[in-house]
Every structure is written in structure tokens, then in C-alpha cells.
Length: 553
Image (cartoon, rainbow, N blue to C red; front, top):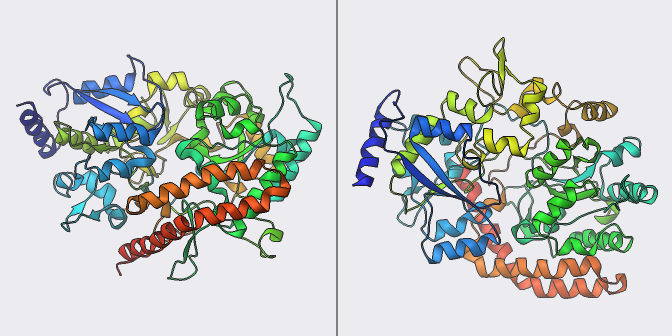
């Protein structure tokens, strides 16, 4: 009966030009799982209160604690599914298990015009075929469906990061290669082994825990001049898209041999290989870690903590490093860390098969893609969180500072829901606010105007206007997208073993006696090759298939 009522109410929403959400709707609590750690919002969170008032919906959040695959495995085994299900980087597990409904049963141009317009430009990448040949879409991407030209004010993805104080101390040098990067960190450490409080600096940290082991594995492809393709290196210069695993190749050996050298110089601590994510964030938040390879979004918590403490000199610059020619037979490699605009395929909320009123969620998402709601989620409440002047969305210093205050956000933002929901990004193209940006951090007046004084002076020393100027502009997105988005489950056994061997051997290679490095590397290659061959062959076929789908071949 409750499901029937939900259906009737949702259909009313979809058919109405301006649905009257609120008290006429039966209140409903949606259970929500997020496949990453997080904090519960406050009971009086103003955006969730507004959602409850307008949609009759409240949320019960569960955030990841522990290992993601283990948690999802338990949920799948017991079919213990929430209403809104975000499987994080292991979303393929819940898709393959049949835990999510097909959203194409609910989304079409007539009944859900906003949702359809949102996905339609990227439908070749997003909509797949099931075994029966039917169109299927299980997750609307949480990020990457951009409007208008791509905006790149900062590097939000992978890079080698270095504290600003290191570059300032060195006289603001241009750093482009692996050797230049470690040389400047070594030199800084030699003269500044401790901070002002007497705490020792760590030269370079490596996060190895669980799926975040990309910090250990992925640098090689970027040093070779490519954006993020997961665990393969792809030659995009021809239509053959030659695809190979990179971790077992001689050019990968060069990176880990360099890390071995830095370890024995004291730049890398032994405990980095056993640090969990919380410990890693705590170390970065202390301001004592000078450099690391990571993705910006992965350590935002540490960045906010440093900013809150006024430790701007300890925040990080993203550098697009490449190999020095000596590592790659004298070749000059061109840096390409930033890719063209890419939908975050299979990442975000799906609606589980246990949800009793999926139509109601679809109707809510449809309304939330309106300009009004996108501004609420991104900017907040007018005259409280932002103000409007001559058609421009603007913030005071304090309003902008609030966006970096974790405690403030728990009471004033709806990140637990919005981060995994469909959203507009890029430019506002129509309406009274056309020409503004959906996200405050991209608004031109805010990028530099509300930047702290330290960062303004730092950029000025380089003659830059934004932190994206430290890397090359985005390159054209390859037809296959980015290969990390491809479903690995058909070769799950080989892929799992492939990853396990990397996790086991690479820390050993970094810490072993230099005299034993070559022999240990040969053993690593010998053991991983059968799994690398199987995984690589599958990925070659999958990359070609994805490219053909998008190109219409």
C-alpha cells in the first residue's frame, strides 16, 4: 500500500509543471549508504530541513567504516541494501550483484526532461546494454556532467603535491621532472629538518591503504605523460589504442628505484606503508608532510584543517611531473595530467532494489536539477551564505571561509546527499544568473578575489593567476573516456591478484637494500606477468569496445 501511494504521489509530481512538494506528501525516511568515510550532519542542518519541508524526505546516513569491498560484500550477501546506494570505487560490485534498479525505466524526455537533458549529451558513455539488449543506466554520475566550456582553475585530480613553503624557500623554481621535485625537497629538508615546534618533517608520504593504493601505483602513467587511465597505459596516437599494464615495465622500475633511493636518504618513513587513511590525513593536517602523490579530492580534509589553522604555507601545490629523459632513453615527455571533461561513470547514487518508492526519488532529483535547487546546494541561502550584485553571485570573506569549515558545513550544507547526487557543473547557461558558475570555487571573482593573501602572493611570485597554471591545459578526452571506469569484473580474479602482488611487492622494493633491488624487481615481474597479461589483454579489448561505442563504429 505504501509503495502504491509513493507511486501515485510521484506520478503527480512528474506530471505537474510546478509540483507542490511539502505537507501533502507522506513523510518518508530514505536510508543512505556512502562508500567513503564521512560525518553525520547536525540535527538542525538547514538544507536538510529545507528538503524535508519541500519534499517530505529525511535521510538516515551510513558512511563507510573499514574496508569498502568487505562492507559491500556483506551487504550483498544479506541483500541488506539502503534506498540510496553509493558503492564508491567498487560500485561495479553492487551493479553486478543486481542491487540497483535500471534508471532508464523512469527517465525519459517527456516525464523527466531535466534528468534526460542532463545525461543526453553523454548517453553514449553512460547508457549500456544488458544481456537482453535493453538500455540500462544504474547510476547518474555524481560529477563530470559539465555545462559550457570546461573550467580548470585548480587541479582536482592526480598530481605530485608539494608544500608551498618548500617552493617559496627555494625561490619559486619551476619544477617539471621527478628529479627536480625530489632535489628541492631534499635541499629543504637538509636546512629545515624540523618545523618551528620541533616536529620533524617527512619528505614524501605514500598512502597504500585499500583502494587508495592508487597513490602507490598510479604515478608511473602520469610520469609517462598520460592522464588517469587507472592501471594501464594507452597510446592514443593511433586508432589501435595500444593498451598495456605499466607496473611491470622497465619505465615503472625507474620510479620505484628512485623511491628506494629517497627512502634510504631518509625522505620516506617506514610507517607510511602501514598508515591508514585517518593517520595519513592527520599527518598532512599537521603540516609536517612536504610532498606526496595523491588526488586533490582525497585529502581535502587536511587542506581545510591547514587553512582553518592559518597554515597556508603548509598547503599544497599540484605539479604535473614527468620522467627526466635519463629514465626513458633520452625522450622528452610532454605532461598531460588534466583530461578533458569526463563524466564520473558508475560513481554516485544508485537506487536499490529494496527501495519502496524509487519514483519519488526520481521526481525529487528531477526537481533538484532546477536552477533554484542547484544554487541552494552549491551556494546556499541568499543573503545568508552569498549575496547577489549586478547579477553576479558573490560571497564575503567570511561566507567563503565557511565553505572550508568542516563543522560549519555539517550544519549548513547537504554534502552527504548532494555529493553523490546528479548535479550541474560548469557555467550557468540560462536564466537570471547566466554567466555565473555553478560552483563557488570556480566563480571568477572568487578564484582570486577571495583567495587568502599568502596564496595571492605565492601565485604572484610565479606570475600566475590560478593554481591550474602549474600544469598544462586539459587535453582532448580520448573516445574511450578514462580506462579506470571500465568494468573489471569479467577478469576479477586476475585483476585482484594483479593488485595484491603490487601491494605486496612495491613497498618491499622501496625499502629493500639497493643491492637487492634488481633481483626483487625481477621476482616481482615474474610473479605478476601472468595476471598482467590476462588483465592487459582484457583491457585492450574493452578500450577498443568503449571507443567504438562512442565513435559509433
